[in-house]
Image (cartoon, rainbow, N blue to C red; front, side, top):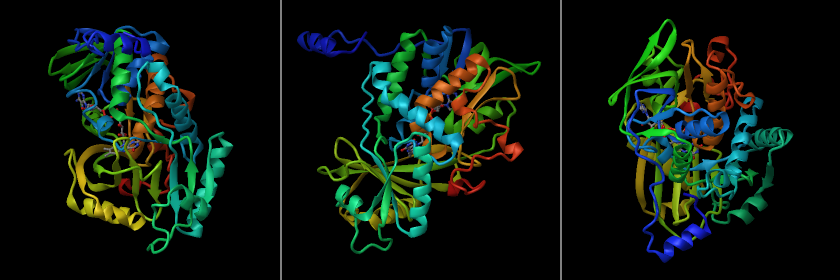
Length: 416
Ligand SMILES: Cc1cc2nc3c(=O)[nH]c(=O)nc-3n(C[C@H](O)[C@H](O)[C@H](O)COP(=O)(O)OP(=O)(O)OC[C@H]3O[C@@H](n4cnc5c(N)ncnc54)[C@H](O)[C@@H]3O)c2cc1C
């Protein structure tokens, strides 16, 4: 069923009785050509592009809970492509380009809003760092503007310029960055994949991976065994656990990241703002709530809830640039499990087991990567060769010492 102004008008006239479910609640079949484990944004996007770009027909996405119940439905919805290193920049810019056409590609309103992402800087050294990053972005054909303090003030008068502990000196702006509605991204990809024959199987946990003669044969699940010549893992925070079913040990730690939403207020923040003297990012939802977050909790956990010291840390960082935050009530708070890789960059690669593919290590930034991750992972699964935009995301780079260390923080997930 295509969504359009005409279908909307038709349904409005007949009491909205004709809308059909956006995807089927499929039962698992005994055999598929490709099985994708994980019904988050990445798994569903992979299925969509496998079917649309590579013509694969018998595909299943297996999700242990409901689709979007993981990080896809828990993130702070920021999209951007303001990366420094060549291995990252091309990939995230490709993702941004896919975001820019995603609503047309999916025939679904995923509410992409290019309201700008501004990284504040607070010292001369930080300004130089951001100038370098902005120059690198422009060299890759990506938009970037270095704003002085007057330009930041004109854009965001609500920030504390007069009396701040870390005075704002300016910012690096990517105007094409912004936000997208995370649930809608999941639903849009699910609908697009289902429309191309993909089975989306919910409440189906993968509990084992069958391997014989160094080749994957299928998966064992809570809803029966499924044979498949290709099994692709897109399990985000659970990557280590699921990969261990195949005997793989990943260079990934699982950590909690929290997010917060305040009560709704009139329009205050037009765009996304990040604090430069601590880890804090904030935007305003279309309903008026301020959406914000900060650091991971810093200890390994699979619990989807966070601890109070980080709540305090996030609030302190927020108040350092926006003292008015202290007058707002926080309405909601939650946590998600982040797959923190040892260099802060992701992995999209084959594994030592033939037919087993890995998509993991997204750290703080996997939501904005969703379209390109799905695109490149589908390419890898279909052709057994990495897509050029994701060529740097090899699993063996940790063994080779060829890290893609965007933050320059080394193997310390708490610093990425
Ligand atoms: C609080 C928070 C804020 C964030 N903010 C941003 C942001 O602003 N911008 C940004 O770019 N990124 C952000 N991220 C990161 C981003 O959300 C993730 O990197 C991205 O969503 C991960 O990919 P995914 O959507 O496929 O993951 P998920 O939605 O987590 O999908 C993985 C799925 O695998 C399923 N699964 C796990 N094990 C099994 C199994 N054994 N069998 C079957 N299914 C299984 C899970 O249930 C889950 O649904 C944030 C994350 C969090 C937690």
